[in-house]
Length: 145
Ligand code: MN
Image 1 (cartoon, rainbow, N blue to C red):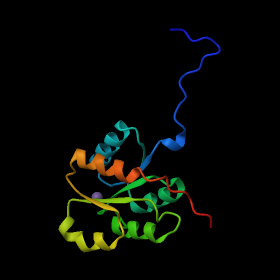
Image 2 (cartoon, rainbow, N blue to C red; image 1 turned 60 degrees about the horizontal axis):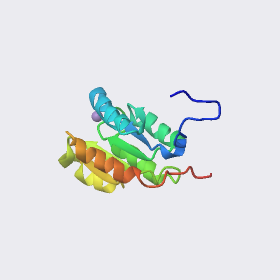
Image 3 (cartoon, rainbow, N blue to C red; image 1 turned 90 degrees about the vertical axis):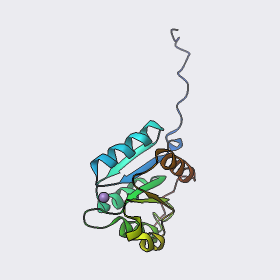
C-alpha cells in the first residue's frame, strides 16, 4: 500500500528502549557467538577485546549489562570487574563473568562483586535468560562528578 503525505511509518522505539550489552572477550569465536546471539535478540552490542578498552567503553557508553571474560590480555576480567564496581560511575552496571575455568577462579569471582557467573561452554538458553533478567534493570545513568 502506498503511503500518502499525511501518513507516517509506525513510530520507532526511542533509543533508550534499546538495551545495550558490552562484551569484553578476547576469543574471536566467543565474541562472534555472544554478539550474534545478542544482536538477534535486539540488543545493541558493544565489543572490547581487552579489559582496558572494555572499562573505557563502559564509562563512555554506560551499557545495561557487561559480559566479562576472565582470561584477557593484560588486565584480567576480575580486575576489570572490581574496578568497575568500585567506581560510582559504573558500579550499577550488572556484570556477568564467564570462564571455562570456574574452579580456578571461584573465590575471586565471589569477591569481585559481579552479579552473575556463567560457565563456558555456555548454554544458549541460560545465557539469554541471564542477559534478559539482568539487562531488564533501568539503564544505568552516568554519575555527575
Ligand atoms: Mn579469554
